[in-house]
Length: 398
Length: 128
Image (cartoon, rainbow over all chains, first blue to last red; front, top):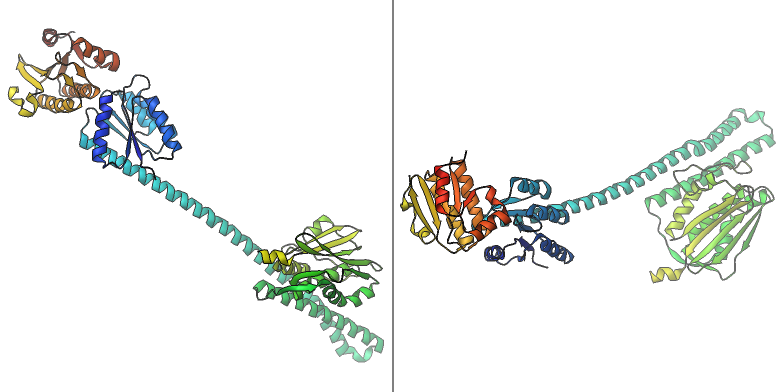
């Protein structure tokens, strides 16, 4: 690191020699001593030193110089290096000159000529100390500001996390309040009716009531299973076990669970995936994701509609595309999909119930697999959902 | 009134001192009035002022070169003397007088005379 430099400015060479000698001897050669015979020359030296990133702790300047007076020079220097301590060394400075330097160049000290050597050295030493202390304080402040900014970022991130957690909790409560309470009310209401008025019902009516109770219980169980999976995912206790799987059997198995529901609405499901198409993923998670998307497509496709499942390979990903020709959705709804803090649940074409939780779970599972999920939709035209999973080679390459 | 005894060994090679008719005359004996001498002059002239002398004449006719530090010492003397109710006149050769008046414009701070007689007269018959 470069030694700090003290700059001395005086139009009299002999004075410069004397100052330089005194400083060199008494400051143990710890500083470079640069001399200049005019303010202009000194400003050039300052510029050079600044280009070399050299410290200039002190400038000592004469007042009375032929072209640029000491106060003017110090003011100019102050504009360039405000942190440098400036000393005016003169026997003839007018009070206005000194005042000017004090007010506009933050003059550190005024020393009269002829100066007392001890006084000059002590003043310079104090000025150097003061300069480096200020520099240290400036650096500490900068560090503090950086730490503060870092802390603010952390607070911002944490606040966002807390907000999301709060939204999650709200969602949870809303699901429990509405979607869990409603089927239970149905179960409780119909079972009470059966219990109280069993003999008043016809056999066919009893069968209908039991069917309704069974359907409500089935929905509740599905919802509870989803909630439990989601809760486990939230707690981070689900492990991601990725392996290479053939996509076709994975999709076939996932769709199988909804064959009956699709048949009930006369919706056809076409799977157009090559036999050898593979994906690198956690089987259980992606199976859950496909089930949820297919279930949604069935829910929002009119009877007689169609669902197509395709696959596509890009340079970096394997994509699973689930398309339906259902009712679609507008921008307001589609932009809120996969977001925990937006409530986008709506009833299906046959009044099927939904919570929006399934899609949130899908997003979590896809993210845990390093992938992305998104939906494109148009009202009355249908919805296309894409699950994009990185190729295995990318994970191996790191 | 102080006497010539004020001149100790450390000053006598640089300056002469005499006091006559209530006027103190400090004669600078060296040719080059620079930093080292100016410090001596500052000390010495302070002793003269604090010794009670009011009318002081600095004679620099032998001086060939004077730097800003010596001029600073003169300025210091003028200010100290005036603060103590006195005044200072200077006798300077032309080239020194020119430096003082043209470069530093300090001739406005104290009066400069070409010879000792004129300086003495200015004390004896001050201008109104």
